[in-house]
Amino acid sequence: MNPVRSLSCILAIAGNTVRESVRSKLLYGLVFFAVLMIGAAAVIATLSYVEGDRILQDVALGAVRFFGVVIAIFVGIHLIHREVDRRTVYTILSKPLSRGEFLLGKFVGLVGTIWLQMAIMGAAFVAISLGTGAPLGAPHLAFFALTAVELALVVAVAIFFSSFTTPVLAAFFTGGVWVLGHASRELRDIGAGAESPWLAGATRLIHRILPDLESFNLSSEAAHLLPLTTSDWLLPVLYGAGYLTLVLFAAVAVFERRDLR
Amino acid sequence: MSGREIVRVEGVVKDVRPGFGLRRKRVLHGIDFEVREGEIFGFVGPNGAGKTTTLKILMGLSRATAGRARVLGCDVRETAFRRHVGFLPENPYFYDYLTARETLHFYAKLCGMGRARRIERVDALLEQVGLAQAADARLRTFSKGMQQRVGIAQALVHDPDVVFLDEPMSGLDPIGRKEVRDLILRLREQGKTVFMNTHILHDVELVCDRVAIIVAGRIRHVGSIQDFAGAGERQTDVLVARLGADVGAALEERFSAELRGVGDRIEVRVPEKRAGEALSSLLEAGAQVISMSPHRPSLEDVFLSTVEASRS
Image (cartoon, rainbow over all chains, first blue to last red; front, side):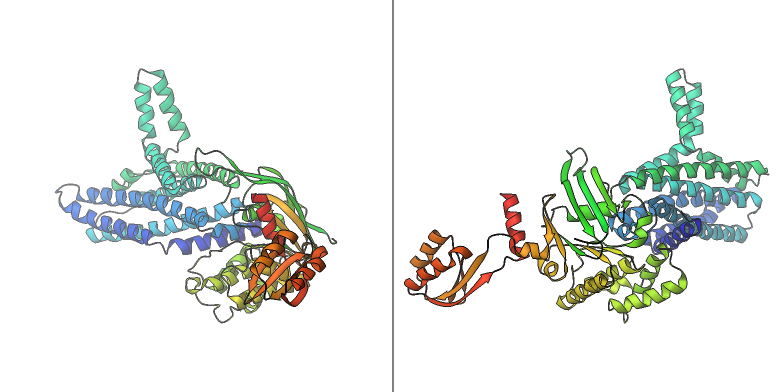
């Protein structure tokens, strides 16, 4: 396999994926509501006499994460499913590129789209913060960087499930992984305190298998402008990159065996 | 048969599960055939016979349950051979927000073509398939026939040695069909091999060198068009006027004749070896014999009798 040729194929698929996804009305709808929610955070903050800035940033950063993940799940699953359902994938895979290159191209394109909408939400957040005089600093940058990695991981999980199941089930499973991925630390701690060794083992296993998505959550650090060390952001980035590589390998392995009907 | 072997299918079996929890159904029952270099090979069968499934296996889109399929000597699960292969799926769908030119550039990029070669090839192909005027219009504004032309152009974008076409005449008007037929013949002149799935037998007779008939997942016949034309019992058509109903019934019974009304006349088809006897009977009965000609079984005759035989 020629790496330059392979990269060219991946970029061609990725470029087309970005072009296709930015045409999605669903994406525009979700970004609109995300920006609206970030704007509403300023109104909500005025309801409190104390810590107005913190409330503003808590709500706004929460909106960024929530809408980011919803976009990652729905746009990711919808685009992969559509390629197979409309059979555009037939003509693409008849060309000299592997299914792995196709899936990787879709991943790069989808992540590009998600990061583009994150940039829009980030701009809205900065504008609201500056407008209301809320403080901004390096932790905010770290928050957006780690959320970007988390969303790339969610896209990889969405692609994995889309490679073998229906869109509804893929959305359900990906959403489930996201919820459990955020709750797995607490579940592990609850299990460890339980009397049943079976429960302790099961919750520990869930924590090990599922992505530890709380490691990407720096919203408290950002909202309180807490100081961060290099390892606070570097380790999650490395963990996320490693985990999403494994998930993509699994997705390619499954998609390679899939019969396209 | 001459030329290098381009496609070889050996004992290919395909089982599919129609739905979750349902039993597997066999759609291909160990099919075998081969396609040689430079020929136009027609793969003919009724709907649901397994034509598209076979083509998907050859393109690596679907995996055979058992058996072996090779294209250009490579296993169809490999990727490299597709550099030399073009494919037009049945009712192709493309990104409708792209123009015809953008679509072809996209596929050319996937084939690893450089910019200069891409521009030259895409322009030439748009001209060749009659889309030069609509090159910069978005595909969503295209008719089915125009989309089919885009499909043919993308199959040829990297100048492949072998072209697989699934129902290439689908959605085309008579002029479009003629143009595609001419295009296929030009491909043969250029030394390319064409594998064509279709159920339009007239087109097959006009362009194909060899044909395989598949019915219910089994290959029933493989041979040249000439083989098909000479297949079956030779018959003679006698066109007559003033034929009484009782005489017609007697001919049907005595000679196993087939009677068909042609305007106010009747065409009587009888086995060639008994044509003289039948002619005497007709003249004795006072029928007016207008013409008498040998009947060459067409591909359609062979196809219909094959399908009927396999159903019964």
